[in-house]
Length: 261
Image (cartoon, rainbow, N blue to C red):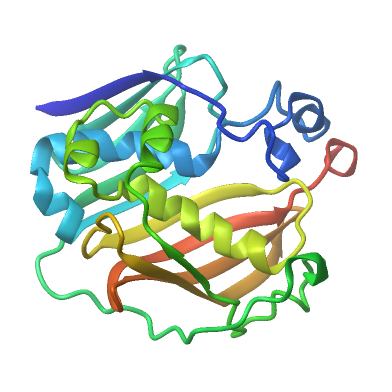
């Protein structure tokens, strides 16, 4: 048995500061158009997991996924959860754009001990570099209040059809995954960059009006095949308690087509 969720993929970030989502810039890196954000493809994978496990997935579910191939705006994307917990997102040609796994955590989750940090003034963020993303460094935290009404637009953007998020005024796991990107870009100035994977444990949800905080720590920064990667431990707190813990990986500096030729 399997659980599937098919959507028309939507590039939510065409106007963002990350120009990897812009058609012209993405082509400079060898893609045929702007990339649908990985965190939104990750959100597509949530749907079959909630179909299978219901609310248990929102409070004790585990989802890890990596994005090997781009998902493009306007194309059909099919997220499939297998009986064994395997996950895929495939494009109309059947290419696996994302792979991973999901399940319910059997016991307590070891939440990383990540300190709060103070972000730099937005216009004084340092450029991303091996120095500004030094291994072991704490990123400046993000504090906000969850607004369930504003999340309606987000749910539309990710083509979510499950009514529980709007009806109950709770956060979608994909929204929490998106915050992993936000905390990185809030601390350093990035050029075009690519989210390549997230391994997350869901410990709870945000409800309307909840105070929340996103904390992050750099666990690795490295070069591989011409790309420069960064790994983060990310913890999201709701009302002071962990609701989400993730290991988040991004290419903060992708190699160009010219350098890979």
